[in-house]
Image (cartoon, rainbow, N blue to C red; front, side, top):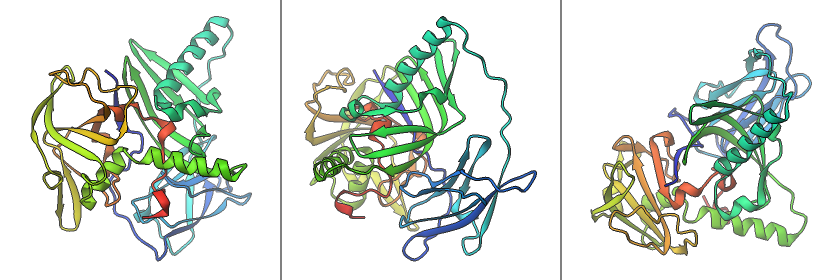
Length: 358
């Protein structure tokens, strides 16, 4: 059974601020030792469509209409990456960001066909695990795989990159710049985390633009984020979801415990929204069939699920969630079944909403 730990869009909990129509950062990137400006640094709000580069003097301007918890990401191939929660930025002033030069070990020189063959084999494994198994995968690829290095530890494969991975997704119309923080693969178990920035591609025709929008909607509806947003809005049943409570045993087999209502899952305290996951949840999205039958084998009492069926568990009983369905600590959540097929090919920015509605 395929398991994926959802740490791919990881947001650590921190306070955040709203600035009128959005958030605006002005800054300069410099070397922490010499004070010299650093040009061509990638600067973006994680999980958004807002990104830019520092100019020849190290300056940049960046703004977004998003009102979500955000992190400012600064990345440069020659320097250590830096992540800044917005509540630590003096947003009314020019912020100065000091980067430490990256200490690189001598890279292994590929001098044999055997080494190249092993790397190529690992790249194929990585792409399959990282991009996912949905229909979007067919029109999505990593265009700079050469920046990836691999380390094998017993039966586990780990991947690293000093540069941003660039994923070109012709299914959804985004070029995704991904700061990979962690990747490991052990058998069918995959876990990775990172910070993506979404650069919208330019459509060559109205037909292509419309196709991208339809694929984005298709990707969003039935996703974990969509499900969580319906719980908060009280539209879970009307939007096609069925949920039951149960138990996942050590073999990852689900056994039914009882019916459950959205009100049993969502709780609000002191203006904050929490989801309660004391038990595992079986979530069926009845508006889409699952031709892959990705949940076959999950039911202890062998029930064939015709529709998209996912299973949701958590390491703790209660997790905070934003009103738009964004988890504050997604690394504590695990999904199985249909949702486990998702990968980078199904990434959508947090500032994306079907029909432009927030």
